[in-house]
Image (cartoon, rainbow, N blue to C red; front, side):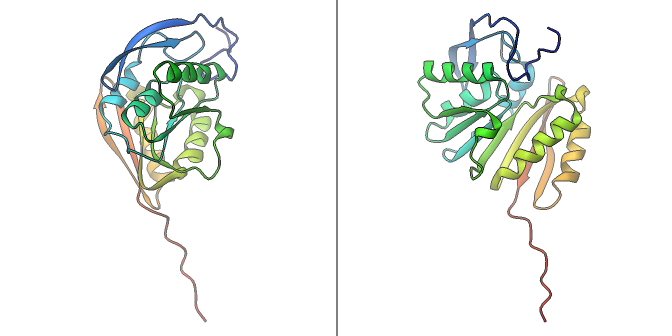
Length: 213
């Protein structure tokens, strides 16, 4: 596939649309996937671990699936929280088109599939769920998380699934060091060679003390 990856903005590989039966939010559904997106033939193991080890999403507000692919996390969130607005964010235009197709086919009108820069700056999230694109490289991954985790609402959680042998423990340490003020970071679950990392925002960071005259 050369330089064409699932995190390419516009995959050059053939689309090869296909229909796949999967189980999402306890429902057996049929979805459309394609070549040039992550895990086109099934719900990948990491996403499965994440979906099995996270609590029900908040019933309302804005929810974020970061790096949505064809949409297993976003579609699950939308089915579980029909009154919430689910943002499915990816750089891959083909993936976003698939999310839109699948949401429409499943009657889910509460999904917004969007490029990162198309999410309004004032939107904050009641939860973030992500199987992040580890293979983009450490600097890109860190930049991604530094951009989105601060957009958690107060007393809200981000849940990330990372394969153990692809650096989950070092990522957890980096998260704890980077989001030190106002957040806690811990391993929430382990399964099938994956770690689920929970990042909780407790509130706005304390302001700096003011020296009064």
